[in-house]
Structures are given as C-alpha cells and as structure tokens.
Length: 68
Image (cartoon, rainbow, N blue to C red; front, top):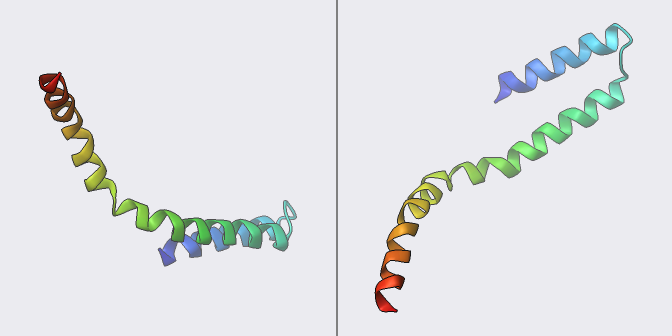
C-alpha cells in the first residue's frame, strides 16, 4: 500500500518538476486515491460471500419452481 503511495507521489513530483501540473492537483489526486482505497478495501472482503451467493441462485430458483 505504501509503495503505491510512494509511486504516486514520486510521479506527481516528476510532473510538477517538469511543469506539467501543479502541486495542488497532485495532492488532490493523492487524497482521492487514499480515501477511495479506504472505501474499497472493506468491500474486497465481501467477494467470497458474493461469489458463494451467486452460485446458489440457481438452487433458489429451482426450489421456487418446485413449490409452484
């Protein structure tokens, strides 16, 4: 995780040094990446449950069709 932060800031420093962008823009992008990773991180823990639920959907429909 920290290596990704380092890479983003290093590349951002290169862009600022070459005059392609300003520090404020690099900082905004860095904050967006950090805050979005905090939001997406817990969702990754739900992936096994989601795949298990999607594999049981045909069984649920089979049971519902038997009841009718």
